[in-house]
Image (cartoon, each protein chain N blue to C red):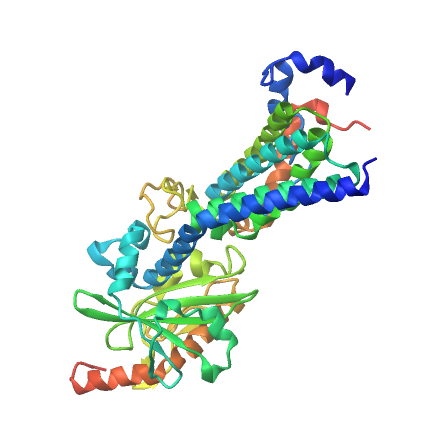
Length: 236
Length: 247
């Protein structure tokens, strides 16, 4: 507490090296999915198409960022005995905001994501960051940390979504206004696709549509990441 | 350590302010959300007559206003199990999920009579069980009350890539087009056949790997369309009287 009192003079929205690291670290060195292995449930469930993954990523970024911000703002007032309950109230209300907004703006995507929006509440990334970071840091940094972790989660979601949709459905961004048909015959697929076909002989891989495919893809991503980033490799 | 009084006070203030904020947001978004849901359900019904929409449009290219307009133009009677039209209800206000919970004799049947270029289409709603949860669909019959003009299915929780193909793969619903539910004046419905359709007028190919869902669709169609029998028979009789019915 004494330390924070001294540093009170520094600008409120400083963006230096430390702050930059709050954003970039979760993208690689400290990725919530591939390194901390948190939030796997929704990563397996919603990534069969890119568009829902994208919406989910935005929803999670919103929830992690603002729950970190609010928790950090309240951190000196939150009674330690009930801090988890307080965190849950904050997360749950933000998730409800997301749910109501989606219903208002885009009902079909709300239907498609169904329970997984509600399940952001139980996404370990959110509460993990509140406990580990927001409870001990200032609002601005907590906010950046929330955004960083949301981005790290979202990046993996979108990568997995792209791989699964291209090989499982032959399309990209299905269900969104910019739907594209990438590979495979155009006949037996979604209404309203462009007719450009790259590999007409390609048969959609049904395994890619199943959640199990996401498990393999995330596993392979972890492998690739660790072969580049050797400091993540556990030598013991 | 904080005192109990502080803890209770803190929690009360926090939850009260959160509750007020969320209630406010819900009140603001409520009407639009309900409208969105309504349009979403209406689009699902219209996808049964996708090939017969005005100006050759697709369901996804219709605007919300156009969807509401099409429904305002439609005749929407609600039938009871005897085929009589019930007064004071519109088909779009009947919730099929609720109807399915009632005993069979008390169910209400929504019917949408869609007109395109002077041709009438009867859109029937059916609901049944798939592998994991409920499945449902809308079947459009041509004016002879026999030939299927189009079908659209949806589900609550079928396996993606397998059972979920009844919705995701338009080729499945497309197979139903042109099939007939009567054979020599007898009701036979349309069957989803494993191993490939043999009789193309009354059978369609099943989805490989999704036997239970496919059987569920067969069962749902047989039972669901049968509910409409009294009404369909009436139409067939009047068509016959006019000498329009060939088969």
